[in-house]
Image 1 (cartoon, rainbow, N blue to C red):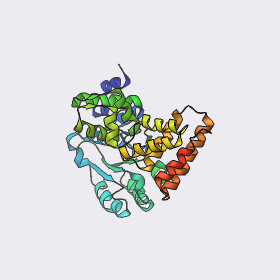
Image 2 (tube, one colour; image 1 turned 90 degrees about the vertical axis):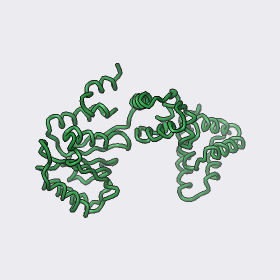
Image 3 (tube, rainbow, N blue to C red; image 1 turned 30 degrees about the horizontal axis):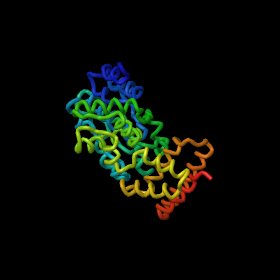
Image 4 (tube, rainbow, N blue to C red; image 1 turned 30 degrees about the vertical axis):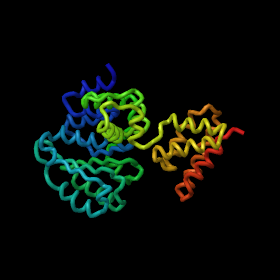
Length: 315
């Protein structure tokens, strides 16, 4: 029995079993919910790892069918000014909760997008309505949250999902949706998503709309990226034959509709798989950074990629 199955069985009566890969965090939050004694919480971590999902699970487990009446969800990216805190949030915070839980929950997603003035107003609101309201903040960068708010919250730092977590989630989805998926497709989804389960599910849904049988090629076609082996082939050729590598790279870019920035990112990942010494790998990575900067500043993309390929030639 793997870790995910053990975890699912442990929390099967509740929705907490749906949160994968954040076992220590979920265990502590589950204890808060079980005792109905929850502090203000701050969830920090990369996108698509379960922060917003866990917030919704908390609300549904605490309040049951009446969770919508006791739960205010706002995205701070859309409403980031001080007026939102003074009006909408304060109006919700000052009213009593419905049911047998003594407090309501205000969930601020992407709280790091709030202006400093709005955060100062939020700090005062958190102080004034602590008896009947709990605040749950979610952000990608906790360093952008002011210290007075951090000191009033229990901070949980979410980590990117591992390859095993991804594999289990993908297999569960494919089983429920009656999809067939190859092992290489799972590997491709993990590489493309970079630990973001939301991105992975969107790509998988797009693939399922085209075919019930999903392979690696279909996934790379959907996201308009070259397969890693194509980039590796270009780099291998570039070590011996610059002109042929240049033409091959142009074909890859045209076939997949890649931008220069897309290619640079894929090249920088594949450099570490080349059979060259570490010192040369570091030099090439440094060159990738320089070329990407030139592209961002407005230089011609293909000329810059040609300049990058010239550094792979073994003299």
